[in-house]
Length: 245
Image (cartoon, rainbow, N blue to C red; front, side):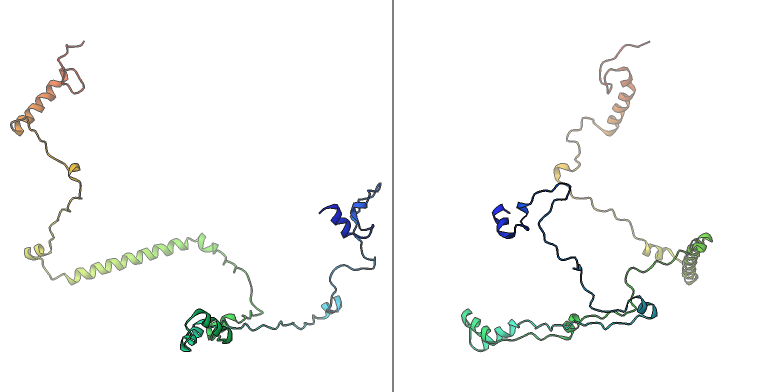
C-alpha cells in the first residue's frame, strides 16, 4: 500500500500511522483507536444459567433449538422432457430448448433416496471412539493353555485321519487283489514331450566320425589317458618331455 492511499484512508491525524513519531521510553503506536474503558470484549451470554448455585443444586436442562431443515427440490427429469418433446413433434434443438423453458418435470424421489437424505439421530447413550481391547489372560499364558489347546486339536485331527484309514482298510479287508486287477490299476509312466526349440539350438549329432567303431574310439581314449602324463601341454597332446628329478 502506498503513502497516498494510506493518507486518504486515515482522514484524522491521530489515526494516520505515517505521521506518528516514536516517543522516548514508550512503545511505538500504530494509530488504532481503542473503545472506552467501560467496553467489554467478547460475546455476551444470552442464556442465564443461574451460576454455581444452580449447578450445585441441580442442573436445569435448557431447551434445544432445532434448526428448520430446508427441503431439497428434486432435479429435473430430462429423460421425461425429451420423451415429451418427441411426442409433441419437436425435433430441432431450438424447439426442444423452448419446450424445456416452458415445461418443467421433476424426478420422482424413491424411498431409498429419501431415507439417505434424512438426518440420522444418534442415541444419547452412544459412546464414540475405538472400543477398549480386552485384557490379556495372563493366567492362561502362564499355564500354557494355548499350547495344550493346540496339541489337543492336533491329536484330534490325527485320530480322525487314522479312523478314516482304518475304515477304508476294513471295507477292503475281504477283497484280494489279483494280477489282472493290479494291471488294470497300473498306469505306465509317460515321458513328457520336450519343450520346443529352434532347429539351430537343438542337440545335433557329430557330422564326422573318424573312428571305425565305438570300441576303437574307447581304446584310443584309454591309450591317451595313460600316455598324456608324459607329454607337454594342458591336455597332454604335446611332445614327450624328459624325466624330472
